[in-house]
Amino acid sequence: MTDLYTLERGDAPLLVSIPHLGTGIPEALRGQYTDVALTVADTDWHLDRLYAFAKSLGATILGARVSRYVIDLNRPPNDESLYPGQTTTSLCPTETFRGEPIYREGCAPDAAERQRRVETYWQPYHQTLHAELQRLRSRHANVLLWEAHSIASVLPRLFDDKLPDLNLGTQEGRTTHASVQAQAEQAAADSTYTWVANGRFKGGYITRHFGAPQDGVHAIQLEMCQSTYMDEHAPFDYVPALADRVEPVLRKMVGGALDAIRALNAASS
Ligand SMILES: [Zn+2]
Image (cartoon, rainbow, N blue to C red; front, side, top):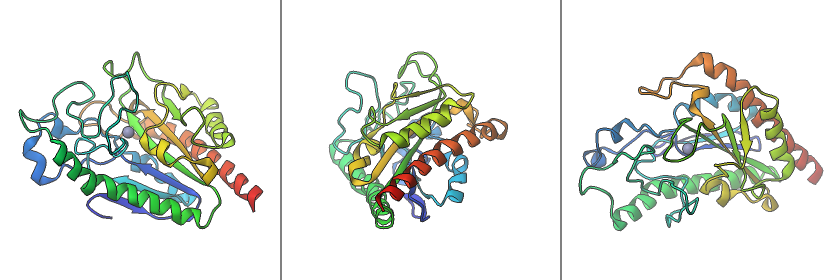
């Protein structure tokens, strides 16, 4: 563990990345933030706890410790829009999902400060993610990168209506072999939760950048409604009675996709 991320290594062809898990805002920066921003409401809360089952599958689990309000690890470092034409948040967002200001008057980061944050916070996460995928690829011809996300189920500024509970994203199938996506979809379809593949969320920067099935890296993003496992209002408590229902579904989605990866590896050996 470093100040920037937690890393638990496993040897299975599975890496779970949780880039929005972090709640940390460095002490030196805190004075620039509004009180509402310091609640870091847009965190992908508790996903390390929810995905703890993946350790028993032999997963490597990488989780950010720095808040997306410092820098968003799932945006390109040049800050191009992920969804041109739609409202989305940027590399160093200046507004919360609800449109509240993140910085006090005159404190938003300028280009030099954004670049410093790329070097200080963004690059180490991405270098670690890259190195861990390389390590796993040295053992397995194909590996699964599972991008774990969660979000408030209703955010009128970002999307219409309530989101489906489970939102799979693979850039319309470009970031993974079809058999891997099919297994994750089947597990979602067999559950009582609402789901969609490549709806509003098609996979963010990490899924798009690292997902290269021809090179053995199969990336799937799961954006799930926080209503499936926690209280969506401050203080954002984990709700075991909810989480205990959705966790077996996650286990089947990830486990099924991992089975498909193993089948690809068996076929290629
Ligand atoms: Zn997220």
